[in-house]
Length: 260
Image 1 (cartoon, rainbow, N blue to C red):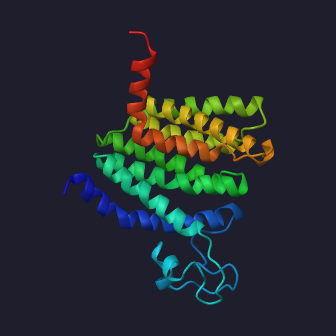
Image 2 (cartoon, one colour; image 1 turned 180 degrees about the horizontal axis):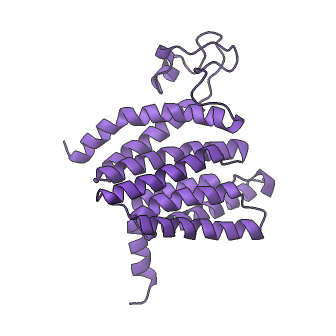
């Protein structure tokens, strides 16, 4: 068994646990509730969810998507968030060999599905997510650099300022961009910039591309502009693509469209 597979297997339970926590974040953070207390409860009958019914993905399947106490449907959002988060964490563990980088990327990528889901449902990217994430990643990048962990604080800072700076200008001159997007760009720029500015460029280009395609699909389906998906999910998608394929995409672009 290769080292990548071993890392992926080790990361799987952590990914599922993070995914379970992210379902709590998505449910409570937009309403200003604590993510620690009270324990998880059924939103309909208020029954506390037992530990046996709180196993990521498996419990939802065994209960057939219903509360054990009252039979109310449990949203498919829960297993989808758990699975998508776990998949990204496992993929990060497999893709990045340096331990410091792998941990950073796993934590970063675990935020993307939750942020996208919150922005779709509530049209916000909560400060309670972006502020702590930004501070934590800044500290982590510096500490990892100090221990030769494969991060670059200078490029991280440049990446954050470039990505967030462009979106800040867009937010000022237009009504289609919120400050939540700018703060998310700071987080994405810090993390991906720590790996290289190419990753930030691909993330930004991916967000614009996905956003343009999403807008075309939305308009073609008869939606008006107010009904379109906000930009946060497209930024999250661009960040995921850049994390795994950013260097290859940047190399392909530079070799194909630049004059030698």
